[in-house]
Length: 201
Ligand code: SF4
Ligand code: SF4
Image (cartoon, rainbow, N blue to C red; front, side):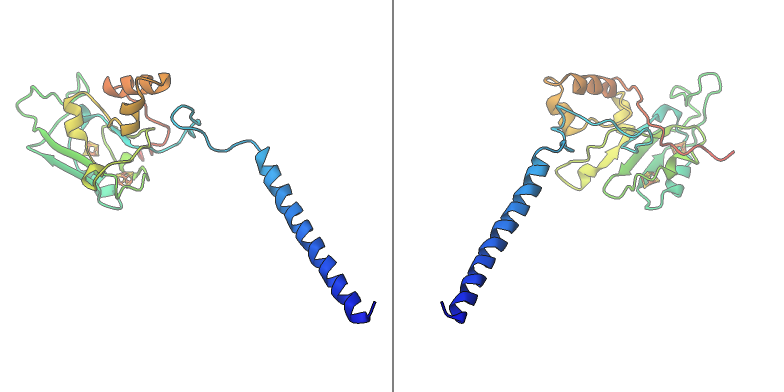
């Protein structure tokens, strides 16, 4: 065999070896991930636990809101919209703004635009009546940009503190924990997280 033929045969077998080695390396990595524990879950059939300070869609107690605008002023992206027909005062006996008191104005609008909200919780800090909280629901899907604006004062008229997400409405009849959450929201029961920023004393 000539020297040229020997070097060409060597190059050929080196190429074969390189290819076999790279396929083996690829397969080793693939197999490693095949047997690793999965980090995703099939939601909502399965769910992961939230961190205690998770900040989700707000929960709002309209009957404690005096429409003072402090939360809107604290919001860094101006995504809280408030309108009232007159001053609102907390009744010391009940801890609520009594709608039956003619001296109290009506909360005409309390809305949050979730296409802008940063979930920073800064709105919770200045609230003098502790009526705005960071909740634990995270679903923000909607069909239009306007759908991202949650009208909390309107929700209060049907007894809700937070909106019912689309996935919850669709899965409540087939998944136990979704039904529990749906019933809680529908009944206006709060499920705030530890994310509210306590007021500075
Ligand atoms: S969480 Fe932050 S961005 Fe969202 S409404 Fe409150 S202050 Fe504004
Ligand atoms: S700071 Fe509290 S009481 Fe004042 S407008 Fe906001 S939510 Fe209502």
